[in-house]
Amino acid sequence: MVSTNNSDIDVVKNFLHTPESIETSELVTALGIMNISLDGSNFEQKMQNILSVIPLTSIFTLLGSVNKAVTSVTCKILDKLLRPMNYKDINSSGLEEYLIIGLQFDSPEVRILSLHQIEKSLESEEAIQDLIKSPLFPKALECLGYDDIPTSTKVSDFFIKLANTSDSGLQALFNSESVAILKRLSEGNETIKFRVFDLIARISTSSSEAFQLCISTGALDSITSELNSDDLLVRLNAVETFSKIIQSKSGYYFLERSGIIKSLVDYLTQDDDKDIVLVLVKSASLKFFGKLSEIEEVDFSEVENKYKILTQLDAHLLSDNLELKTTTISVIGMIGHNPLGLKLLYNCTSPNILSHFMDLYHSSTGEVKLICMQTISCLIGTSDSSTDEIDNITEQIYQQIGGYPTPLKTLMINAKVTIEEVRIANFAIMQEIASHPWGKIEMSRSKEFIDYVLNRTTESTHKGKEWKYSIVQNLHSNSGTLIAPNVLERLRKYLSEGPFYVRTTTIVALESG
Image 1 (cartoon, helix red, strand yellow):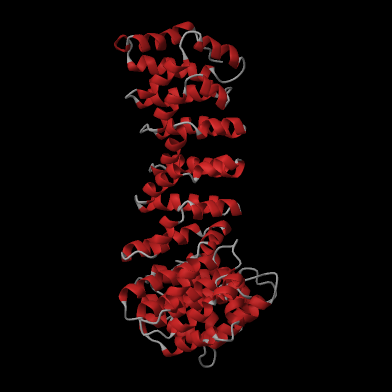
Image 2 (cartoon, one colour):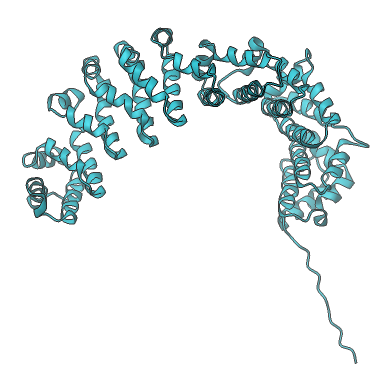
């Protein structure tokens, strides 16, 4: 066990008095021994040994060293020495100014040290009141503007806890000074803007009072104004930021209660698809709702019931604008790639969006056709082991692909074309078909398909071989009694050989004579 002796403490003391008398390497060594000695038993005695020689405030000054090793080990020592102290102790010890300086340091490690001490204020309402009145409060809020994730995450987590712990803490977060800081930070880069919006969203949805404070103080204005900006880039960035905010249920409720969801829907109802600005904002809004459908915490059926998103998607399937058409097709795939979304699409009969989508698939060519195939693979790739309903829906979608004598034949033909993107799109559909019980039966009973998928000469590209191998993997997996034993053995042999197996031929040379 390492123990601090007076010589190590004296090295640090002497450096503080006359820095030029001690080599940096010697200082780092002495500090390292002090740090290690504070671990283990007899902590209080070891702490007193240090503080009886070197005041705590003097140790803080070592954080300003140009040597990163000195700064880092000093942070560790201070963290341990401050551990027994509550916020009131820290405040009464004259350390507030050091914490303020620490929040403004270039070193994330120093900022985290200061924030860790500020976090102790959550222990009591009295401590919270002291913090609110302190210059530490606005300085801590400004730490949202730092680039490093550890600092910004700790700041966000602290203020969310503060708002949920104390009414006075919540009020302080929405006073004029705090709102001005948040507004100024939101005018920075997109990363910082998102942090600010996310913090406001998470706090404002914690209670009705919090949301009303958010509205009455104008904290919401900086968010909603982005969507109504005359600057196209600002509007597009706003929608992208909203897409990040909805990663939680509270984020969705915030956007709904603030009227942003309705504003995005209103954009979709506007008819002028020749207005390039409107087209880009509508496209971003469509993607937003696609991402919203993927959030597990949000019941997308409630969103659909209130805002009729599928009706808007159906209308944009017929758009003459290629950007809107292809975005809509992709969003249908995003919505239908989970059981709830697929059932919503399937049960939507007015309009019959799935039928209209499949009609578009059959009538389209080129890029639109390709994106339709990618969406079909998303739809068929949906599964739900708890019910047969999803299996039945995916099989019906497969049958609607059409082709003679079966849709599988169509996919096989398309998988042999020279355009790689088309081949891969068809491979992706086959892979998803092979994951369903009905698909395993359909594929395994087609001798032509089995011969094709196991024939290594039908695909020459590296990527194509990987796709064929993944199809066989899905087909073989959990097949049980669905596949005949002789076919199952052929699949097993193919898998054991790997995706890039090449059969070798032995050539025997005969001596003439």
